[in-house]
Image (cartoon, rainbow, N blue to C red; front, side, top):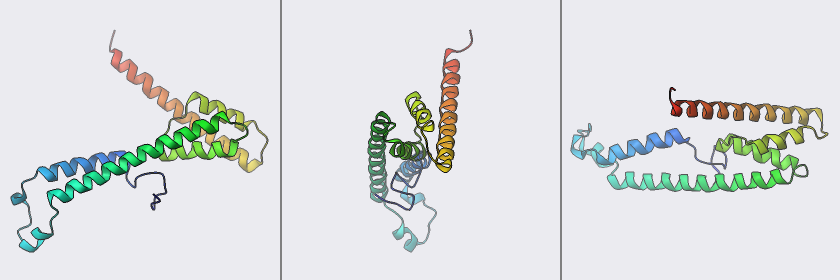
Length: 159
């Protein structure tokens, strides 16, 4: 569903959603008599536990839809990668969307496809776009590899 933030997911990132859900759980468990609102009119406007529950269900549904869309776009990305070089423009758009919208970490196959596309003839403007995307994806993949290796080293422990 299109939103002011594009049609690629929630208006909130995952950390914000986790924080919101935690706040909802706390609010649902809170004692209604301990609220700061002493004004009876303000208390009648206060959300009920069922309103919090409905909001939580709506967030969960949006997360499920986001996960479904992510899976769809990553499958599309894989399909376009296998069709390179014929689908170079479509693949570049799909990869950009997956990296930006879904925090996709480019795989070795993605980097190989990007290098192959970068070697194809194109205008200087398109060449700059391709080189920028290749550098960005290479940096993302390198940082992810460094983080994974550091985590493995921490898990191994001293010795």
